[in-house]
Length: 144
Image 1 (tube, helix red, strand yellow):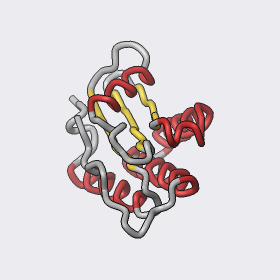
Image 2 (tube, rainbow, N blue to C red):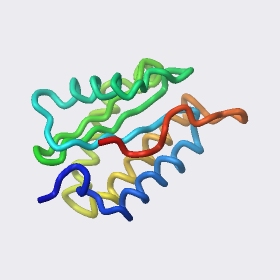
Image 3 (cartoon, one colour):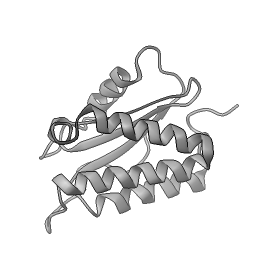
Image 4 (spheres, rainbow, N blue to C red):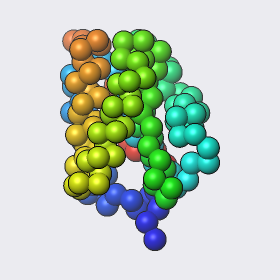
């Protein structure tokens, strides 16, 4: 049975972590990926709770983005902290999720998610370009 921890192979997980690192080269923003088995209730509200639990609001510019997946009941949400949410708004997050779902159905899920991570990096970079003294404020590892 596929669960959160084995939804992506080790090689795919490494590819996703590399995609996060690559996306963050364009921005001072921070991107995280959280995967769990089930989401009971609204996926956006759950993603916001996970965001807080992971202390993603502890970035200097409040520009963290969380990609949240509940794999067994197929729920996805993308949420951003105050700084980036004010720039992009709900429509952008909804578009990212819709594109991701469409790509999940059409192709390799890890490749689709890597592309989504890249798009988040591009958008973050428009409003929060990487600075010379930028430090990685949050881990790039996948949380479960």
